[in-house]
Length: 202
Image (cartoon, rainbow, N blue to C red; front, side):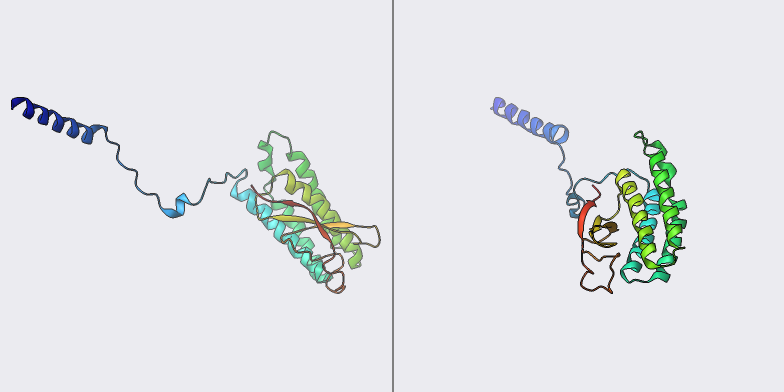
């Protein structure tokens, strides 16, 4: 009988010790909103840098839309706004990049500014659109180099922007083609063009 009681006491002590010292507490249920988010995205650039580039792109899209509307007065105003914003881009942040893109990005940003300023002085909308094409050709490589972290961008092309076999490109924030070189006035060609490339933040 004493042996039975001894066995019971040993079992009680064993389970008590297990419960107090060895058993791991169950992890509390994580909120659904956190567990369903997946891995967090790591940003390469500071919020200040990204905001400055987004402001530049907003001005560019204003300019592009003015050409879609064939509004030369608004386009000149948007071009001057764009030129001014090139000075606000936090380009110095790229100095820490070990691939050495700072000098190239700085030079191309200067080309964006000079082309936008030239656009604002042109006497007719055809010449303005040629400068707009130059703005685009300087701006898009910058966005590719810095791995632009904003909303998706689409690099689009009009095969006859300045007549047969004289194409030109533009950047859009929508996949739909709205041609800034032919504009709404040429309704048959308003959606003429194709997407050649895109930038989608990872």
